[in-house]
Amino acid sequence: LRVMGEPPMSLMAIGADNLDIYEVGDEMTARGWHLDRQQFPPTLHLTVNHLHAGRETDFLADLTAAAAAARRPSLQKWGNKVLVRSARLAAKWLPDSLVSRLTGRASALVGGGNAGLPQRSAAMYGMMGSLPNRGDLQEVVLDLVEQFTEAQ
Figure (cartoon, rainbow, N blue to C red):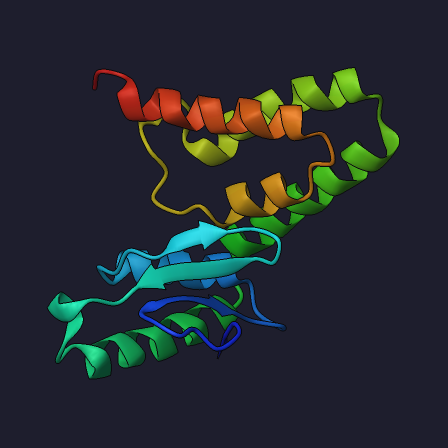
């Protein structure tokens, strides 16, 4: 893990070369931290303020544990990789109209469908990063926003 660039203030992004940074983000969420996800390059974005003072040790311990958990293999991570690689192959070889339809179906799978908001988002961000057609990305995001606003 590394801090991207040299942030002059309390706003920064964390990236990784040999680790799924979105999995690290999911693990941090499970530990009670909220880190935003960014693409191009894939990073976790955070702002540090006075409310975080004195929590540095907790944050770094959780970040270390999250990175270790993200490195451990699991069926869910394997399934996520298959989904992301399938999206890349589909985007490369299939007609745009078919990719758009498949993207809509896949977004329901990784976004939780009608079951509410996803608890983990690594697969969703991986899939979105593989889409060459940004119109498909808009559909995935709108599907996720719809889940935010649905009555439960």
